Image 1 (cartoon, helix red, strand yellow):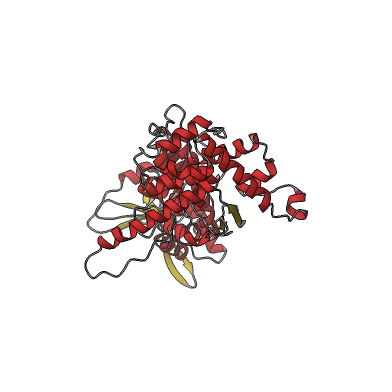
Image 2 (tube, one colour):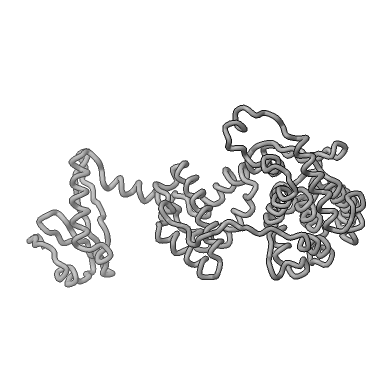
Length: 426
């Protein structure tokens, strides 16, 4: 077979396996190695560093004859430039084997970015475990393409969860930006992908009768008592569900009727002092009683000889010892009990309670600036950002008391006698 002829697809298909491996060459230097089991592989021999090396270009017909000639031309150019294409191929395969999988990237993202920096880290982990890891967990992160992302989002949308698809796109953007910063991927496959669904800002504001139905309906709702109290505290204070759900006792100065949220826990990173009205203080008293009752039950549930369990630091602890409630668990509790809460016809979320407090306060004549201070919104006005350093705590305290009196009146009680509404919450 020393007479070299230009290879064609017909001649390649005509090559038959023999007892020993053999090679066929064309004048360009492109060869085909044929093994006893019939595999045909394109090869090329070249010299570098005074040594003869063999480059395996690819197996036919997975690699077409035309593609093999293109790769041969690229390899020749590499050799002319002083590079070793064979060594580069080996190193590339080694890098592929060592490249991070999506499961490894997800774990690194959660450990190094989400948990230290995000209050919603648990929700990120839930989304990754539900949709990303089953589909891509074993794949190399750098092999994920734009089409892969679109297919995943379509799958979530098709199961009737378009807003969840939006949230997934946002999460994947963060994950791949993290990967890009750490040189795990060469590009973000989410770049340029539009949201699967249009979202309109929610406008839900609970009417007075709905707030009463919710407050009283919590008694019959199928949820843990600490979740009932957390929802009432949301309505009494107008604060964010994430900050309420994970509130520790040591942030409270009940003697001064203040809740001091550190910047590390505030959504916008700004420390926030929340004055507490009688309604909120009553809820906290109920939560303390519940904690005192819960501790002996926890101790009794432990095996004999087990160490004394520490009292949980959370005002609203999870059913799992050592954890607080999460925004997701509070939202799920409301969603699963809409009928009991009188909200079946017009559902509401925990964030709708915050909007309701703000809307009712402005209707009661509280200036919007003061409401913004109560909600701990960033002041984007240059006067507020640069010049006005007044704390507004007295004005916010007055607004909180106004809200407490209004809500107590709506519930049919005076602010000092709202304890009667707690019923059997514990």
